[in-house]
Image (cartoon, rainbow, N blue to C red):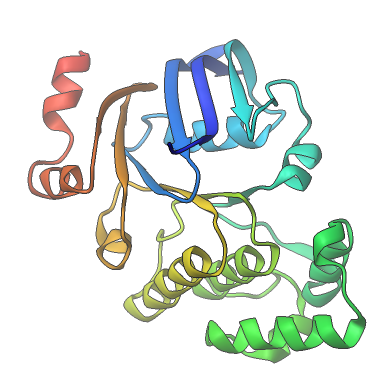
Length: 250
């Protein structure tokens, strides 16, 4: 029997007293790939940030259980260390912090990822090459001067380096050209093959899903999950969009 890695029950959340999520119920099983789709403004990214514990959002009702532990009130850093990863739709820039030093520090906080400097350098360089990323970028300031595609490659590098139990990819395909999209898809596939992790891909575009084996698809409209299905649901969305669900939701 497949075990749920993440269980969201009756979750409602808001930002600045504005309700966004309404009684969301969602289960993500171990070692599966889920897709959360919906029109712009549906609340998809909000759900990702609430799972990650973003303090900008308030949980008004419900619970989030991860790997058997209630994390509803857990801080973002503790959720990260427990094995949750969130890639950003618009990755931030951090001047003065070299990418390599950032990655080394993040891994140093995780006992299972500690290694010698030589081993770490070899692993990071190997992953950079795998993602067709210039290793020289590792010495640059985090995100500063990077193109949109390069920033997304850095996110994929972190994903493969940290090997989280749950990876939430928020609009990772946003603004990417065909070549960069192929690299991101390659990173997603490498993650699924290298560890028994669970993926939640948040998107409103089906392009990134063409090279991904999807187990379950969920549709969100107006802050609520309105449909659940398998990968075939993606084809329906590709052909007909979200109009029917938007009309039904009022």
